[in-house]
Image (cartoon, rainbow, N blue to C red; front, side, top):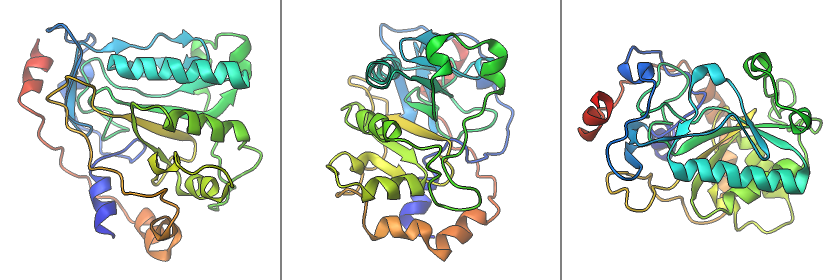
Length: 280
């Protein structure tokens, strides 16, 4: 495995199948409110969140899915990002974004599903741009049972054109051009498709390939201003990412890596400030 890929593995991910663990963070039902402003603490994969905001179930251009998980909390910057991107989607494409997981009320490690999403700066957004949800609010059961279809053709790494549209590309571009966005994780095939487009590539640097992510994209924000205990990732490499580093994802080595059994990784220690957040 490439060293850069190994490092990235430690810093994500939604859908990576991390082993369920028992922890108190998943049982807390209210944000910690100490302090005058929201604070993201630690790293995306080992951190917590003070004074989280919650994303309402419905808003202009979006609806929140999987309400039963109660993973709809984030830093206020993340809530604003979602609302702004959703408004753009509603105005330009008359569609609705279906929003997956943000984070828990106080961030921290989850019982399952994600290694990141711990500091209130990550969100999963489905590729399914719903016209149905544009005409009515989805019911609770619909939000629990609907699935976002893969944008890949069956048993291949080719894009399924029946599940992909120019609107998907424009939504990704709109998100990537927002200055608060650190990076966006997509399936390598999505990145490859975007690289073939004869349009401006300046925004593609933030679009990062990663296993999975064939039915949603994962947006990660930068550490907010004045959040001094928030620690971001290493800088994104220069360039648009459409070079040999992208070709590696389609190599035999990469495909073998994707199929190899994943050993449960130990959970990293949280910053000491998170003890106070959890026990408040």
